[in-house]
Length: 420
Image (cartoon, rainbow, N blue to C red; front, side):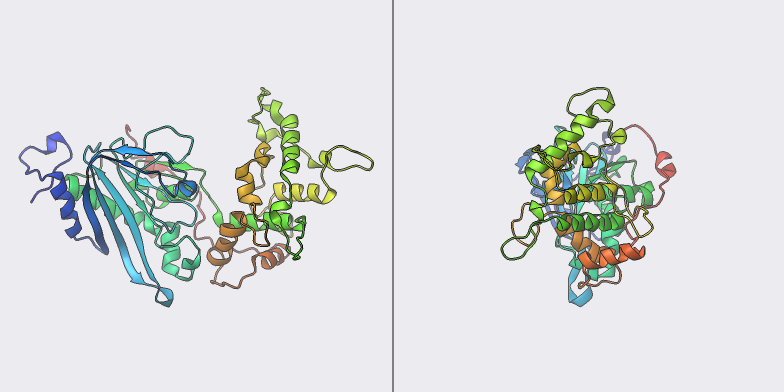
């Protein structure tokens, strides 16, 4: 039975299968190294907000979608290290009113979850309709493992799939299913993601340039292995000034109080707001901002709000970036940020935990990724807080290069340029 073509000009002389029938037929599709676990027709409905939006940056609003075919499957299901099950899970949504375009939706964090394939703009302030609502066929994937922790790093194939392998394999399977369902290949293909999804977008351009006509790479991590070292460096500095509770535990969340960060933010704004030509509370000339935190250091006899010498030193060290024993930057330094007092900055750097177990992202996901994924060979006993300092002193940082983006040429993608 022929499946319904996508375009009017393709329908002449073709037998058109009803969409629900064509959808159900996908469950029997024969695809190399892939199995279809679900293929069902959905009537128009309102989809609930994406529960993973905090990681992917996608919309946290309801989405009204038309009738569609929902497909879920697994690529290369296998038993990996220690008999643990692995495979690349994917979700593909095929709208009845297809616009002949395909969008690959990037993941976030360490992946390990299957986000709804909506194609939302990966910036939570965006009001644009998700790609699915606009007629795109959209696919999402889990990066080749099924948990958001970093234990998958024990398995070398899982490492490769997370780094880039899953992107190529899911793209191939998704396009085959699109052709089976609509009777036509996508006329335009795009990749869109933010954070780790942005890194995946850049990897798509570098490793699979002929598969996509364009990418949207929001806040991509270019050298995540070195960024993880940088996070550990920052965390070590904050631990130096973290107060100790009654149990003798360092409380990193209290290394800088909200009021102290307000003080720093106000001083940065006062000094650097005008560099962009307009004093409006927004620092757009951040490249020229030469703020010196020593101006906030407590002076003998002064009653003004101030920072201790130790805290001033920590700020200077953190914002200058991680350095090796030769004084060379291991990763990028940070621009002086007036948003240092916002919940987002605290969430990444200090957290809110009032116990000896920090909950800041740098201490949880960042430290685990450095220990398990970015250092080879896999060593779950690697001491992030001790060993990183030793390596810095020796100037011998050699983290995993698997996810590092090399100098990128977009010539191949440019050769496919056309109208959107």
